[in-house]
Length: 258
Ligand SMILES: [Zn+2]
Image 1 (cartoon, helix red, strand yellow):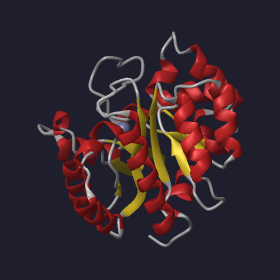
Image 2 (spheres, rainbow, N blue to C red):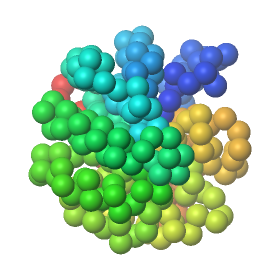
Image 3 (cartoon, rainbow, N blue to C red):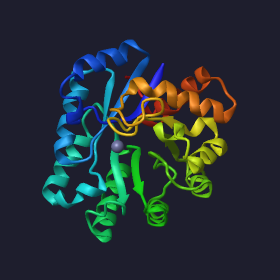
Image 4 (tube, rainbow, N blue to C red):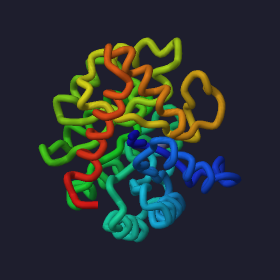
């Protein structure tokens, strides 16, 4: 059974067939889904999904592109949503210098605040980092405590950077990009990653793997990702699915009773 560690099923791309698709996921080997929020609005829609579907859990956080909407008042509200019984992570949070929608200091400020929140509430973090390799690593190192755990989602940096995160106890999120022919760097990373530190993710509706590249993505495509990882690691696909499921349970459920 597959653990989908990062999806956006509240996205409007799923408006026409969301409930059919989610029941299909459940019938086709997707055991759990963590739906990840990115804005204040998507925190609400993510929690609504988690309340409606027993197999969906929520990550609550504000994406670096959206931190401009944060203030003390709604940050207090955000904290309350982190206490929801189905919230299993703070995310997605981080730095994005590719879209560069907010200035770097603003992004860093709210990244720190959300990491502090995660520490206080003992939630793992889901980190989004795009073209912000050095600054993300620096912020995470500064915030690091042995208790703060997390995943670097849709990892796009070099093996040396992955090694630094592994040393701090982080997991690495691997999605559809690993099936792309030109994804040499990510394939190198996957080769060096210990299997017990990999999480499978789609980031759907984005980043569909080959052979569905360019189409709307969904968790139904995760077997292609597991297959690509298995090939790079010289493992059986089933073993990759089993180990990554265990990894995600460890990180998100932290041994608690569901
Ligand atoms: Zn995402």
